[in-house]
Image (cartoon, rainbow, N blue to C red; front, side):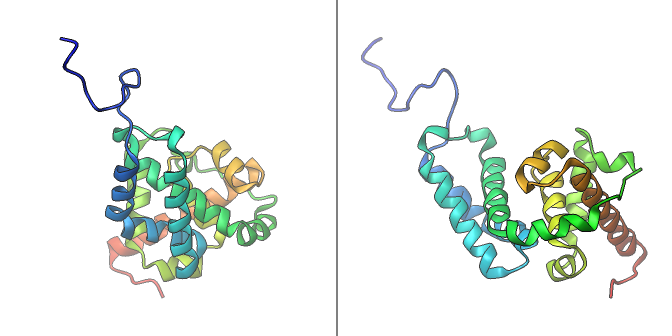
Length: 193
């Protein structure tokens, strides 16, 4: 029946989120988005600015709307990208620290292992952000968030952070080792000082 039609835009069977749905997701996820941005930037004002910029970028990209199924991940990704862009001046100077360091921990690569990703992310989020910011440098924090929350590959991290793959691998090793130590401390009841 040709007289029955939908007001929804047909896009080849893909169900894209609307601008209002994107804004609503930013509101619903605000606490987590602020935490992600804070862990990357190390500063609450910079984190708030990063979330604001991410929301603005997300709603300005009308031709790149995510599907409804991927909306939460996309909103998080936009926030992570904005926080990194906002903090590259702090991230870049950390790279020399990781020169000539290697990682022999295959579990740190987290290749497609969703349960390990979730475990590392959950362990990271259990630690007080102030402790994370104090004990991990900006590069290690950014790599940790990219790897565990955005599920970014080493190459993706290299492109986002503008550092070498070896630097990303070493920073990733440092962050994952630190997260594992924090998890072990919490499981044994030892409080970090």
